[in-house]
Image (cartoon, rainbow, N blue to C red; front, side, top):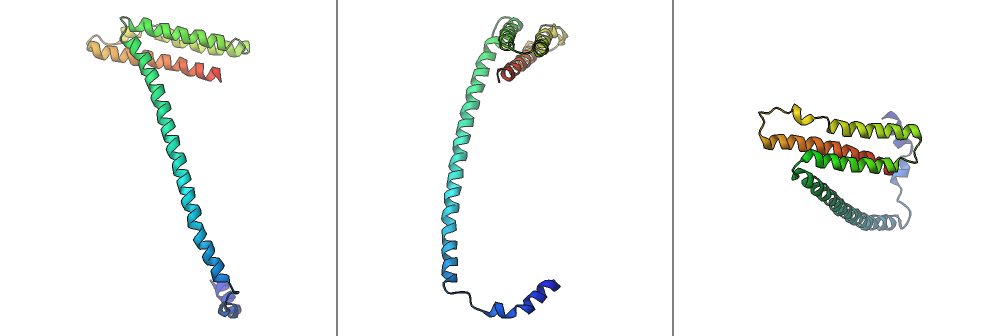
Length: 162
């Protein structure tokens, strides 16, 4: 603070001077203009955010609806496992076609991961669920398990398509 106090003492006469003519008018004009810009900017940002939210909700609903329809078909099927494995194999075939142009090593790595997921889904997981569980709970567990495997394959397919 000593430096500030010393500066004020040394320049005390400058603080007593009146500003140049028209200074307060120019300053008032600048103050008056700013709120208009800020209000316009706020409205623009609010409108852009609203549009982004509406579009995001639409995309999420469309994706969720598509997933729900796809899963509902398998969950209502007589043999859920066969239905999901059929869908997994269809996705695996699509991945295989998409990776034909890949380096042989990369293609082999991707397809190994794909086959590991399918093999895990077909490995007899349903036999590991306790028989004491109600059928509805067992079906829910199996549905979640197969759906997660299918979603894993879908994620690989999406990454390969990029």
